[in-house]
Image (cartoon, one colour):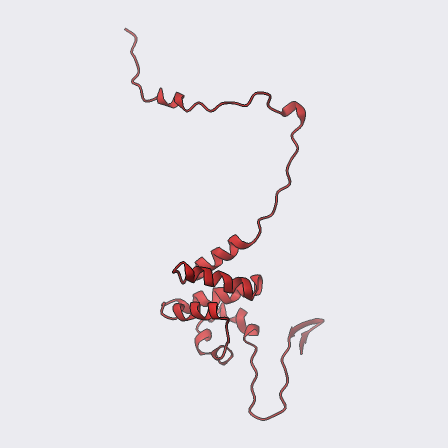
Length: 150
């Protein structure tokens, strides 16, 4: 366990044998924002096991020139929305035939519940007794030529 003051910064399992290395790739996800190429080359991410939906998306993104950056955005979203929500969003995006971080993040944003605004009670003296009627016909009068006074 690694601490900074009273805060736990990281926890890693200890191995007592020789030549045993343990990586927790989720610990390194924030670093990926600055170095997205590490997703492809760094040891913690070489054996990163992702759920099937995210793995299919990762495979599709590898063909893109900015695929690493896009995958980093998606992995970062896991820390906010959770693995299941991000996997479902990735599966939905792939079902629509799109492999893009922006689409996955958009699906996640739409799935979050919007804050409910409190309804404001209108005082009785401000209530309308007769609702106004929309008269779109008055715009037709703008189409008729003006008559000049003779």
